[in-house]
Image 1 (cartoon, rainbow, N blue to C red):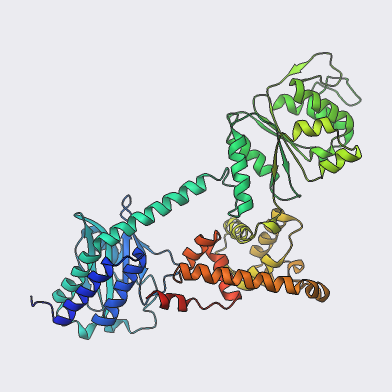
Image 2 (image 1 turned 45 degrees about the vertical axis):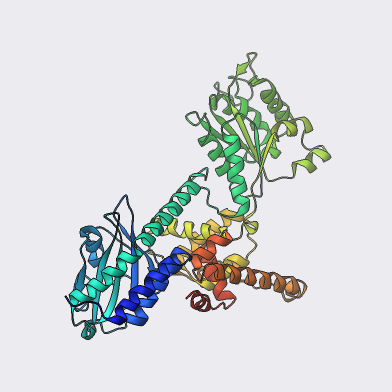
Length: 506
């Protein structure tokens, strides 16, 4: 095989200098692909890294191909990239338009004449193991010597092998951190990435292992029951019963019997003996939802149960002892109820040993979109529809709405939208009319200045994050502690040109 030309040797020298420079690994690899495109005619260069456990090739860095937001992988032996990753041998496709093994998952060549393009693909080997795959297109007529082209690309692969190896380790660590972060969520049913929800997760983690009485504060529909279940699930009592009582759904005359049970003949209609909910929860957890609705008599009996862990059923002379953890919840301002005499102060202080505040949905920012996506996926499966996205105008309405019904209202809203959607997208027309009502003009007048200042500050934060992330929206989302969908929405809302940040990077 003929030796490398002076120009190609210069390319290899330049790439060696790039790899030796003190840059971010991803930036180094993107600059290498840019150099290949500018000086060798190898366009749409891509670098995939291998998952060491599964052997799956994950597309990580590209030039001339927009992979932002795409999650592209190749199983061992799948397509050209998967075959090179599995065998460790280079491959070349002279005409990608006629090769069925060429998958073009990025869609970068759909508008090109594929029969004019050749595809070159070589393994990246470090410490005698395949750690990645390097590939690129080249105009087929310019590929006079396939062995020469593969040898040149192979030399580049050798130069970048250590950087790709380190990049694979970086990504593996990031995935592990994400797994650990997800495991810190106390329950799969509780969705949230906002600061306020992370604080809730931390409190649940702290209190779960103990028998401490918990009082969950929050508006209706915020998910107080889910937090109670999460505390029980992560506690030593998880194998015991979880008994839920909605105090607001029972009349005063039945609450006492419901909680503590009764003997036969204790009152009119008591035809047989009945165990109370506290006795049913023995060895586990009882959750008293809307505890602020208890009558004065029921409050007195509940106080005794908390103090002595025993009670007397209606119409009985015997004492029932129980080993039960008590979790309560309320949407009322119990401090005010105590001040007005509606709720016993001694009971309140017994219940409020470990308070947990569930924030309303309007205070959870990007969680609105996370939850909306979750409910769309949930109800799409139920009705067997393939809904893939929520449109930007619909997201705008979701974020602008004040959500008085909180998560429960959002769930009902997205269930309705899924049923109405005819295609693969939730549009604003599928949302309830209440979400589509525009704010009144006087309100805008009062809040316009504040809104303008907030928008200006938010835009500057996103621009700074995009600069630090070199135009990578996923990385910018991680820097700001939000989701990529939110960043995409804000970028479009504020007309931020992300391409200029990528240009600066080069």
